Every structure is written in C-alpha cells, then in structure tokens.
Image (tube, rainbow, N blue to C red):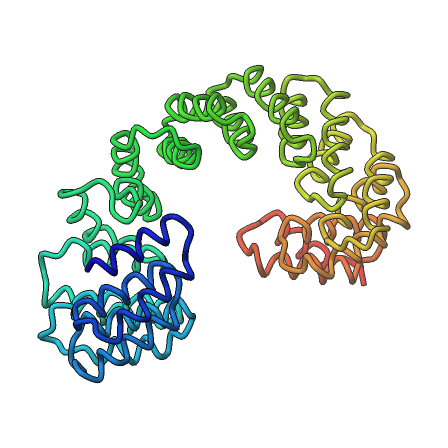
Length: 420
C-alpha cells in the first residue's frame, strides 16, 4: 500500500514516469487485491494497455470474477472495441453481483449499435432480477425516450422521480415534461415544467412552447420574455414569442419583438417574413413589402414569403409586380406549380391571355388534383374558346367534387349545346 500511495503522490506532482516504474516493480510481488488497485489507477490515468495486461493475469486466476470482467470490458469500450466488451459482459454469470451492471452496460452497447430490441431485452431482464433498482428504471426510460417511445418511457421516469429529481446529470422532471408534451398531454407536461423552476434557456423554450400548445399564451409570453432576458441571443424564441403576442392581439408588441430578433439575427428569413406579415396587418403596406423582399433576398424560393407578397401585390392591384417577382424566381430554376398558377392569374388580370394560357398549362402538370385550380382553369379555357379542353378539365373537377351542382349543370348545358 505504501508503494501505491507513493505512486499516487508522484503522479500528483507530475512525476508520471517514476510512478509507472514504481508500480511496474510493485506488480512482481503485489497481492491480487493490490494488483486490482493498480489496474484501477492505470485505468484512471489512461494507461489502458498496462491495465489490460494486469487484468488478463487476474482473469487467468479468477475467470468467473464479474468485477474483473466488467472493468476489462469498460477499458475495451474506452478503446472502442465494443465487440470484445460485449463478449466479456455476456460471460458474466447471472448470480454475480456485477450481473445487473453488466446488463445495463450491454444495453448501452447494443443501443449504440442500433439494436434497440436487444438493448430493451437486457434492461427488462435486469428489471426482472432487480425490480427496485432505480438505475434500471432510469435506463429503460432513457432508452425508450431516445427511440421515440415517450409513452412507454413515462412509467419508468415516474418511478425514478418519486425518489430523485436527477440521475446521471439528467433532470427527470424535464424528461417527463418532454415525454408528456410529445404525446400531446400538455397539461401534465406544464405541471412538470412548473416544478422544474429552471432558468436553462432550452428548458424555458420548451416550457413556453408547451404553454403555447395548451393555448396558455399569457404563460408562453411570460416564459419566453424571461428567456430573452437570460439569453438575448437565443434566436429561435423571437419568432415564437411574436406568434404568442399575435395570438393575444398584441400586434405592436409582436412587431417590436420581431425587430429585436432581427437586431440579434439579421439573416433570419423567418423573422423578416413575420415582420412583413405584421406590417401588413398593421396597414404599413410599403414596409411590409420591404420586409418580405428582404426575406426573399435571403432565400429567393422562400415559398411562404413569395405567396404572401403575391397576395399583397394582388390586393393593391400591382399584377405587373407579381409577374416580375415570379418570373425572376423561375429564372433561378425554382419549380413549383403554384408559381405558374400565380403567374397565370396575374397575366389574366393584365389581359395578356396568351401568356396566361401558357402559365395555366404549366401549372396544370402539378395541380391535376387541385379542385380550386381545376375549376378556375376550366372556366378560363372556356373563355378562351377552348371548349373540349375546358370540358375535360371541368369533368376532372366534377369527378373530384361531384356535389358542386353549379359545375355539373354547366357541363350539362355544354353537352346539350352546339359546343364541340
């Protein structure tokens, strides 16, 4: 023991080589207990090869000793030799005191390999043998949570939280809050978030989001404002907070938050879109257009912003701007039948019917099952004198919307008339 303590002191003063020489000399006449202590020191200091050599000597003498096997497996995991570790852990006898720990370690290894069913089997076996071990409940909760089965994880976390709020640096109440939120039980999730009383930005963000889902907009606003005070660079929260304020009809406050968000993140297209949307609802038309154009400067194929800007241009009768906007976007290679539809409508309003027809035809390729489009396209074709194409289009529409009597009667009149 004196030699081992001396080696420890040498390492603490930076004399690692001297410590290793001392321990190497000691192993020649050390007892088995002392050898195991030396192994633990080697492991702690990162001298894995030396530790393995001593452990293999001990295993030759004690081939069924679970503690030796488990430590050897742990070292192999550190060396990323998982297959060897699995083989070693599977060799530990079921009546060994280290068997439960071996099952948990095996579960981790199988989980890392994507063998989730095998991992669960190992943990369920451990649970059967040691039903009161909280660490097994925790491991089962973590496995099921990680593979997207929060509903099954909840009972295990519930058992753990009765005894402790934290395990392996994981907050159990946070896991329960997330699990309940994942299955849509926002009321239970909120209860756990309230119990957490945390100032961690990620937890606050999820807390606010859960409150928002529960339509507790007042609470979401309160929590997210607190988050911004703690971490003003938490970019994601600005969009969400603005949404909550808008739900409470606090439009000016929502707009102010979006502007603050843009000060923190000037390349956030979502915030530019929100600013444009809020500006429009506050009847600041030109400002709205500017914000939406900024969003499109960041992503020219940002569909939501494109369609909203088209809507504004349509409302203020600037159909030529719609044509310019969509044409520019298509020139970048962006493909979307909605763009062609918007373009067709704009050309139609500008009485450029040839161009409108071409755009309607292009849009029809991707909108063959869109009832609103088919009805509009059918009537346009009729106005252009393309009777047979109009009939085919409206018949397709009627198949999808057989209860639209207006179109059914219109088709009957066409069939009864002299149109061919």
